[in-house]
Image (tube, rainbow, N blue to C red):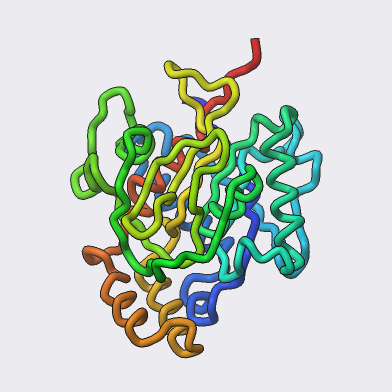
Amino acid sequence: MTKRTMRIALLINDTPVPAVIQEDGTYLDIYRRWLLQSLSTYPDVAVAKNTELIMDGYDVVDKGEYPAEEKLLAGSHDGYDAIVLTGSKHTAHDSTNPFIPPLISFIRRLTSSPQHSHLKFIGICFGHQIISLALGGECTSGGNGWEIGVYGCELTEEGKKWWTWTGDQTEGKEVPGHGGDLKVYIEQMHRDHVPSLPPSCQLLLSTTRYPVHSFVRYHPLSSPSHPVAQILTVQGHPEFTPNIVSHIIDARSKTGVFNDQVTEEARRRAGGKGSGGEGFGRIGWAVWRVLLQNIPLPN
């Protein structure tokens, strides 16, 4: 099997709290570790052994950094295959925050441009919300309170095609201990949410509190026999471990962002069934499945 290099531009939208930096490093470290560990257990062993990850970080908040245009074009030397947007403490729908409008404009330009149609886009939490806004959708403050820690997200029929997966989609197998047909479990850290689907997108995950936890937009050249996801988002944090979530709970509880009741419930949920959610399992695998798709060539 030919070795494949996956080049990703990580748009970094926040800085971890000090305790997280001390134990787990920057968000570039955290996202790289998440993807590499998910790849190491990828059900298709041949793919796992023959895939190399190169990830470059761009600080869009404090430095206004974005990938150079030449690295965003198809066929360019060392060009990117995908754009990944991280989570953030910032509010995606706050247009007065100076880094927000340029970020939305950047994603809107790339996702609507035929010359960038080879790129895949992965949005995590805040990134999920930014992509919604860039596609003409919404993001608002949630009226049903915080979701913190591990929550089970209900899968739609479309969601089952992406999240209930083990390496060979045609066989429809499952890996023991990684959920089933009805729910996928993921660490959460949000109150803002996407209230309805952006145009041309399909719903994948929901919770009882918030209806849009994941959506997909298919590539223009996708077909029922060859489905290709150009955009995949998830409201949760597959890259978070229970320790990371616990440190964030500590920090936000101390500053009064979380009251006692919210803090207590968050701590109860942080560990999930002991090891957090399925971010390093089938959620990470599904993200890799999207990243590794071959975009069909125009006729």
